[in-house]
Length: 333
Image 1 (cartoon, helix red, strand yellow):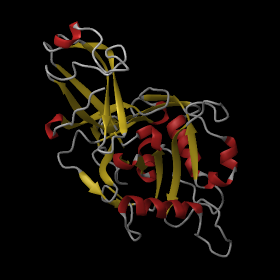
Image 2: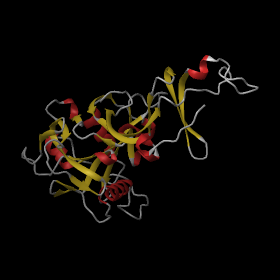
Image 3: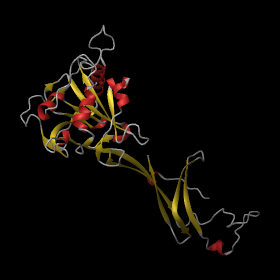
């Protein structure tokens, strides 16, 4: 074993953007979505509904996204206390996403210049979107009608809008990041919603969706209406079939270390087959003037002589005084 200290120029850091399918089916399009009937009737069903890629009771079921409904007045869900009307799960959802998106507890949700008191929200599971949703990859086919697809306008804008949560792109009627706004279609209820790629959230404007595809506006009776399930099951699922395509994006940082073995270096070995264990002399005289070694791995140590990483070569690399080697070690993190 031989040691050599790295020089500063032996290290370089590279960052690459990796785009891939978001869903656990390893496909950009989620063919079917399923819900848990137990959750719908359970305590968490008042707040959100979980969508799976297979039946919720299956051993392979994994959360793909969550659907929730928020209302500034707390409509459509039962109050926590009968004596405090309006203090409901839907109002809690409204406040949570208001703080997350705007960072201001006094902000109101503005969809293309039109303030709305409520919203539907699709929040991708953290493992699904990794670091961010890839802008331009969103395609949602509402109610299985090819003329009623939604995407974001990331390819139509030259200036990106930023909120407290990061980038914000308007939802438009079209596909692959380009389409027509609701206002351009003659709509008066504001934008269809927003894609918030940095937090994995898609925000829908109920009034604009209703104005466009005729999906009934959220029920506002003071009972447990579960608008989130209605929207997910009718607009996103439509009896089990779904056309919901999206890609995830993450930046993978790689640290490259260049290990340089010059012609006069690493030609001798402390392996017992190379030297005598009792006297430490070279066993074979031919190796005195013309030694030969085979590099099989590279170990990276810190100043305390602690092994931090090991890189294995695909096959032994022959080394002698007539050869030099440059081994590139890639560390991903």
